[in-house]
Image (cartoon, rainbow, N blue to C red; front, side):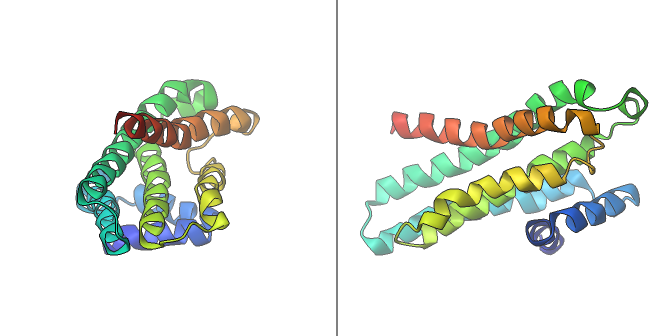
Length: 187
């Protein structure tokens, strides 16, 4: 999990350099995406969901905290999988024909994983801080910048970056907020 957090914070602090290092490590097989998913990403979103119980210290109801933890975990889990499927469906239109045959699905999985992990960290901050700060509402939009800087990582055609940004933002941010809205409506 340490290397996952190192990559995540490098992508957060310097997205272009972070994606370059991630591409190098993927090309040299230093990263096992499945291992990252099982041993780093899932524990991260579970930890972020568990921080919902910190609201007990602020006087929240136990069942409300449990429902919030389940909502956050399921929304992040489904966001990752929906994001991969939606973006991969559009990928043939977004890359050059010469790149299409060599397109690496691991790169897409890592990009969506890191973007979703950032959203999980934002959910963690929301759970830890008692008061709502205006900046917190805009933190998830940094995901758009992270996705944009990952265009070279995914080898997106320069002419298709706008379409990629619309699809990726809608499938990652849109999926998370839509799922959260639906789960809140059910509670």
